[in-house]
Amino acid sequence: MTQPRIAVVTGASAGVGRALSRALGARGDRVALLARGRVGLEAAAQEIEARGGEALVLPTDVSDADQVFAAAERVVQRWGRIDLWINNAMATIFSRVPDVTPAEFRRVTEVTYLGQVNGTLAALRQMQTQGSGTIVQVGSALAYRSIPLQSAYCGAKAAVRGFTDSLRSELEHEHSPVRLTMVHLPAVNTPQFDWARSRMGAEPQPVPPIYAPDDVAHQILRAADTAPREMWIGAPAVESILGTLAVPAIMDRMMARKAWDNQMGAPMAEDARPDNLFTPVDRDMGAEGRFGPRTRGGVTGWPASTVRIGLAAAGIAGVLGTGWMISEATKRRR
Image (cartoon, rainbow, N blue to C red; front, side, top):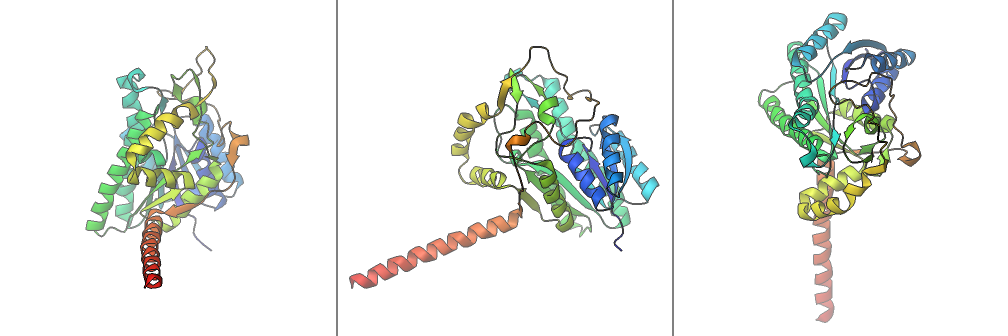
């Protein structure tokens, strides 16, 4: 019988983190749940245990390194090791750049970027000691392809990517047994759009197509199992990343035309709804957001190396095919 893994999930109270937690529970794993809101964490713990796993609720603000290190110590005290650490916690604000305050930029950066740094440091401390372990950074297509109205989030996700690439090189240099992978997500139907701060005058919404958090969680766990350098999840993420690498200026103009309006839903009520930027919205938000009828079923993830090799092969085949056609045409003219 396979031994249960000891997993840590940050941002575990809602959205993709919630879906990841219950998927790990269904595998029979032991899951430490980190987020600020206890109500959502307790609900996630119940889902894990109902599926045959074991849960440990650890209310934690990932922007506070001391809290993250203390949570890791609690996990080791309880279960003796950490096999898998998934850095998923995030915060964002939907707004034009001039309307975002320095404090808001700082907070998004502290949670979305430094939260992943803190989690990685905590995981490394234990995994280097025990001689094994896997760290998964939950990124986004927006780490490559920034869009309007989410500058703080896009900047933070790009920073995570830069940090992860640097750490990966260090682990390679040291021949470390710790595995490191980063997954880049498409638009997902999560509650973040109901509790993220917004100054758009409209309810924020993801740029379609939109995918279900349970399907995305399945692909993230595939990455945790196989540890590719990067995994790109969903065809829209692949298209955005490749488009930015190939023709960034064209993508800039496309985002200016389409991504602005596509993030705006119904007009927002005048009475300000609570947001979770500085303080938690401490209620059970679940994994799914309000976009169920617009959500696509199923999603595929591809290791980035596989996509690049496929493109290279297609390019070579195209060149060879063109050469063959020119050669045949030349022969016919003789």
